[in-house]
Every structure is written in structure tokens, then in C-alpha cells.
Length: 433
Image 1 (tube, one colour):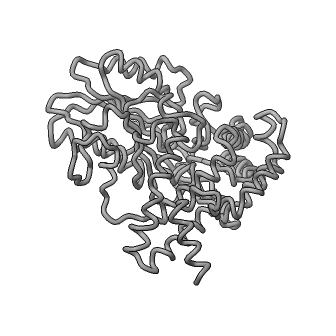
Image 2: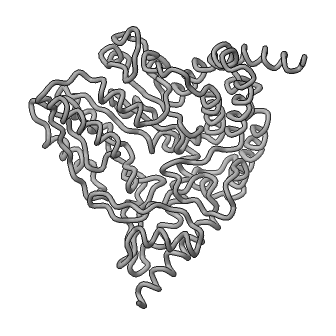
Image 3: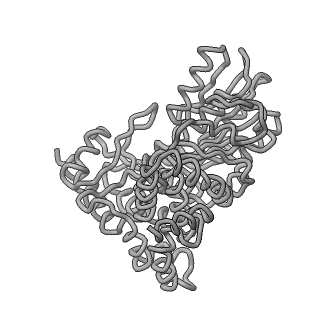
């Protein structure tokens, strides 16, 4: 009992995941420090390919060994320290919910905001914590004061939940929603920027752009689009769901006005965690998606009036940040891009195989689309799983028809060798038939 009281008192002061006694520091920090010594002095390219170092990172996950999960673009598994944090604080919550939630665990949100802001490279007063990119971006989409006739430019390659939000505003309020069409991969920033520029009219108020397109992994030139838009008095909303926690960038680098992301993707935070960024001088004019007593407040916290929420998940986000920062954002990005290129380079010249994603670092990172002539995405997805136990996802959306393949830091080279073998064999079988 005395130990328990001591733990709770300490937690109240240090906010759990954000203290020196975090679960990450207790269970895994020394392992990563020791592993880092193995690659000390190596170039980024050498570290990305150092299997001894990455084997330590792989051991932090509890993925099913009977399935090769190459569909991390939708939801990524959390490392053990994150799972344990959610479990530990969920048990604590259930010892006395109203006490432990509101008087103990609720104290962790401000340290979490600070830590997310540090990773995002912005002011903590520009960060709101919520449940996913849909909630973040819908808050902005529905919160903007637009009137009938105002124009918004997006893309058919944006995420469906954002497209539907804009279409709903168009139906309900008479705004004009334009969608550009792209044939990816595109390895020319000017071509993309010009497409948005040509769609602008004197009535254009907003450009909505996706940083990393979820269908095929195309990286969009958001900074250049933002600069072009701002020169004409147009605001920019950026969907960073697939780039934040994967690529080594700061949100202000994109020069967008608003951004939303899901933290349960490449950051590997608990499922159902997200983050919204709004430039400080824009907060006042955005209406909250849910109720708030001061909807025109300049306080970013007005977007967090969600009622009862999962405080254990917030602690889990903190442990995911600890894990991510211990690896290092640049090192993580380089490794995952290396893994994507590892399998893609080995199948791109196989007869009948087509890649739908650039292999140049400026235009892709983790996600790569692949197809085989004469096989539908669903058929290829099924073939990969039924014979090789490789889990991917078939994509049929607008002019995209492929299987999306997405490795993560826990993915092994042996897994990718199996992927290469599978694609080669399936393509050969299709050719003979």
C-alpha cells in the first residue's frame, strides 16, 4: 500500500510518460542506447542498412510472427512500452475513474502538448490533442467561415473523409468544391504546383492538400503550394496523417495554416489518437467541431472539449514519443525508405510488374503501390495472403489500381525477401497462364 501511494504521488508530480521514470526509461531506453553504440560513426545510409541495430528495435514490438504485416499505412502496431502504458493507466483509471482520470491522469495533457509541439517544431499553444486526422481536419473544414460561392481546391487523391466533409459543406451551404486529378507518380514539383495555381479564381479561399498521398505514397510539394497560395491571399490546409512520425520535418516547414494527423500511424501511438495544428493567429476564427463555452477563444484547448476521453491513451502517446525520439526522426525515415526501396527495386523489372510510386527520395518514403498485369488488386492481395501470409491492401480509387505495400521499423529483411519472392512467383504464374 505504501509503495502504491508513493507511485501515485510521484505520478501526479511527474506526469508518467513525461518523467525520468517513464515506462520507456524503465524497460527499453538502455537497449536503444546500447544499440546506438553499434552504429556510432556510421553514415545515415549505413545505419539504415545495419540489421544488428534494427533487430533491437524490432524486438520492441509484439507483432504476430505468423503474418507479415505490410499494411502499416492504415494503422501501425504500437511497441510494447506503449501497450503497457495504456494497460497500466487503464487499470489505474478503473480503481476510481472520476478521481484517477480528472485529478491524476488529466495532469498529463499539458506535458504531452509540449512534447508533441517539440516534435512538430511549433508553439505548444498551436497543438490540440484529439482522436485522428479525420477529427482534426473536419474541425478545420467545418470551422471555417465560408459562404455560398466561396471556392475550395482539393484533389481526388485526398483522403475520402476529407473529400466528403467538403462535399457536405458544398451541399449544405453552396460553397464550390473543386477537385484536381493527378496521375501519380509525378517527379516534378512545378507540374503539381501549377495544377493548383491554374484552378485558382478570385473566389478561391482554401487549398486542401495531402502531404503524403495515402493511396500510393506520393509526397506533395506542400511548401511550394503554400507559398503560391499565400501570395494570392489563400489559406492552406494540409493532411499530414501519413507523413507525421515518419518523415523528419517540422510542420512550420510546410508553411500551411492548418494541419491534422493520426498519431496511430507511423508514430505508433495507441489506436485512436490524433493531433491538430493551427497557426496561432488563426485559432480565434475557427469554430470548434464540438461545443465550447468560448467558441471564438484564442485558446487551442477549445478544440479539446470532447467530454469523457481516454486518458490512458494520452499516456500511451507520450511513451510512443519517447520511443520515436530515442530512435531519431531522421534515422527512422531513412530506415523505412530503405525498406521500401529494398523490395521495390527487386521487383520493378520483373515482367508484368508495375510500380505506382516513385523511388526517388523527394517523392516517396514508406508507401509503394504495385500491380501485376492481368490481376486485380483484390486478387493480388488475396494471393499474397493465402500463399505467403503477407498482409497488404488492395487499392481501387479514381485512377489508382494497385496493392499498397507499407513496411515499418519492425519489418525484417526476411519479410521483404518473402515479398519479393511472392511478387516474382505470382507474376510468373500469371504470365504462363
